[in-house]
Length: 206
Image (cartoon, rainbow, N blue to C red; front, side):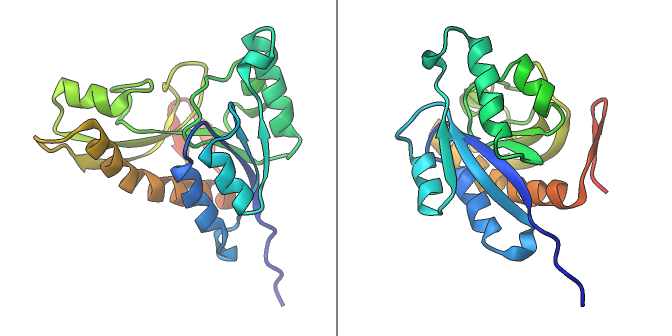
């Protein structure tokens, strides 16, 4: 009789409403997914992302930049708070803070971020607005391995959506989320269960 493998632990970082987080919470309800969210961390209190975690019985923590003398001290504490849960992967699901050297020293190559544009185009926090302003006809979501730059890491996966002539930023953002959520769930599950390697700009999943 075979024994099912224990689920792989991850930590998810959020800054807002947590819709990407909710997709992961829903996926982890199925034992076959093979992933357990050990904790959800945020850079601010009293956000819906934390409330979603609490309703699901998931541990939470808050690490605010303004509570520290500088970004380096904040970065070191964030790394320590994440490390307390010993995750195999850390996932940024709408976490709007750039991590630094101390965090990447621990989790470089194991820290994933989902961005609402087709990188390398339109990095930063205004991806859908920048895409609309530029007049592109296709946009989408990019999952990547975080490095020292701003949305410059090795790309894991991309999903596309059309841009309509009458799109608003909100409409395009929601259309992107419709492909961003399943992409995140699929690849986080696969990478946690099967492992992966990062060679330069290539990410390989067995």
